[in-house]
Image (tube, rainbow, N blue to C red; front, side, top):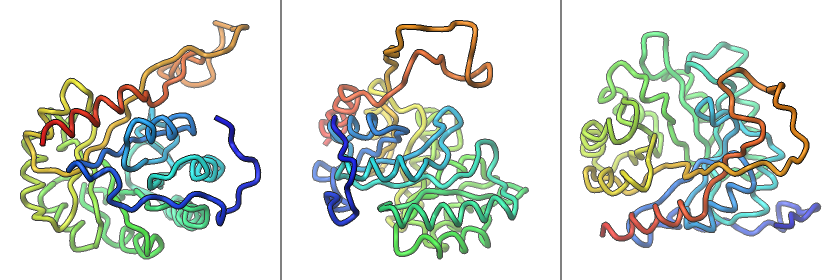
Amino acid sequence: MTIPRHVTQSQQRPPRAASAGMEDGFLMEVCVDSVESAVNAERGGAGRIELCAGLVEGGTTPSMGLLQVVKQCVRVPVFVMIRPRGGDFLYSDREVEVMKADIRLAKLHGADGLVFGALTEDGRIDTELCTALLAACRPLPVTFHRAFDMVHDPQVALETLISLGFERVLTSGCDSSALEGLSLIKKLAEQAKGRIVVVPGGGITERNLQRILEGSTVSEFHCSARSARDSGMKFRNPNVAMGASFSAPEYSIKVADVAKVRTLNAIAKNIL
């Protein structure tokens, strides 16, 4: 796909409404870390994109260059991850300053929504920090990400998020995957009673999506729908790795797979 080199914000295609993708009852959010994946997600029927870097760490803040080009190439809403590093969700004062700066920049460069989470050392929602970050995010909608899965008491935490004004919470039901945490996801969705959107995510594939959607009362779901494709590099040095020992191979690239996104979208539509 040819990317225009000089596209101003006024020339960008306007995003579709926030309800895009829900005409069939479910909205599919796809997390992506590249322009190619964003374009593939939209082509496959995603109703919203969560834009990240570092998906191997669960998602960190993407570059503003990536955000700018993605906004030039897709029309669906783009929600930007605000997470200064991998690891836990207990942030230092300097990390908070980074988060606030990234929020300002993401808004400046066209983010349609923002995604963050912050906890106290005892596993509760950091209400003071979240209040400050929410104020910086407004008027954009905000999702509390899977930091929620690390809380001490998820049902108390859900009420806290509602009182703070988060529009969504992304969760695997405080378990290793959304399928494993399905019973809690259902309880949380029932507890929410429409006051916040509970979005299941974590390990969702075409093999388990139907069970997850039928076993809960949710209206949105979150997935990556990625496949590995071989690098175009002809010369390869097998003795060097650019990251830590657990990092992905240099000559294999994971991108959102149009066919997988379409399959997940079709499964969600056929449940109705």
